[in-house]
Amino acid sequence: MKKTRYRIIILRGGEEKSYSAEFQTAEKFEQSWQGVLKKHHGNDALMQCGCPGTGDTRFMIKLRRDSGRYYVARFGHSGINHFPECIWYSSASVSGRQSYTEGVVEEEPDGTLRVKLALSLKEQEPVDRPARTGAGEPRQRSGRNQSVMKLQGLLSLLWTEAQLNVWYPAMAGKRFTGSVHGWLNAAASKIRAGRTNLSDVLLIGAQKDSVQESSNRKKLLAAANEKKRLVVIASLASWSKEREEGVNKIPVRDFFGLPELIIHQDLWKESLMHHPVERAAWERGARIIVIALTDAAKGNKTEVQRMALMYVSERWIPLDSSHEGIVESKLAAESRSFMKPMRFDAAEDDVFADFHLLDTSTNHLPMEIFGMGTGEYLLRKSQKQTFYNEKYGSDGWWYWDAYSSPSAEAMPPFPPAGKNRGT
Image (cartoon, rainbow, N blue to C red; front, side, top):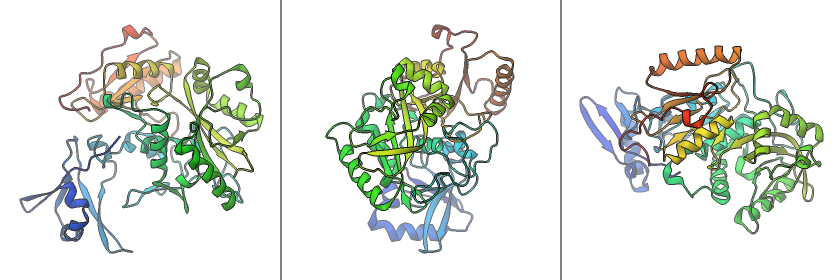
């Protein structure tokens, strides 16, 4: 999805001035824009975004000591207040990205994200750093302070930066293997782990004779020469009993340009065990995304060291349950705009909505699906209801009790769309 840069408004001493997107970015205005930022740096001026978002969209002006240049930055957790199409928009504060400690994900002034991975991309180093949590990358059940990003978190980050967790009606017909993989590559080009640009070691499943196939082959050779591990993202091939039982390699579709992903039986079985929702969806015929960390290829083969899975809809929207799939399909059928908050590596007891509607009178309206009836789950349900009622008000969020009323026809109607809120 193409982002929009809106005007920036500066209010100081009762005087308001507006600066267009062109003035902020065009080379001919560069010195003038730097002069504006220098003038207002460190004073009491109010600087805010001109996008139609709701809430506080103020900016701060920062100075890079190494270059002496000024730049604009969001205030912490304010990204959610910007309009979803704004370049300053971020869903980090309503996703598992907030579970990381300071320094795990850092944003540079040019938009580059520096991440501290739990896994080393250098083949001569141990795979895990500093500690291993399990070969199949299970989601955490305890602990809220994540000091490193695991493989599941990296997949969430790529999906979020590529805007693949967001859907607008205008996107219909535009998400297919080639376009999705192009957006993932673009997202990876802005992510660095240590001294490695992620796009240099990222292989993505490709169709025959495609640009992506050629790119994969070049990266295979470069990684082998530089002794770097690879990150591979692909869709699992259609389910069969034989494929689930395993034949010592991960079965993937759109495999052109990829090496054979050799995997030990124990790692494969453990990974499926740690992803029961994804395994069941795979058997039902759904698309399952696999991300794997592998050694540098030797010939046309490489050994998988770690892997994680993600269940996605026909629109490539991540899903955590079959009930979510029903809601996501209905939202798309009704031409709604919505977002799926990603869990990253957050603990399972952290509260994140299943979806957020983006086209109501507010930027984000949380949506929850309650699908179980155990005592523990009902307690959790009550806690969530209290949380949402206190934060958003009883009319400020939507839910479906899919356990008590499992029929899709019994699903409550969605909140109405606001005027001029979607695309």
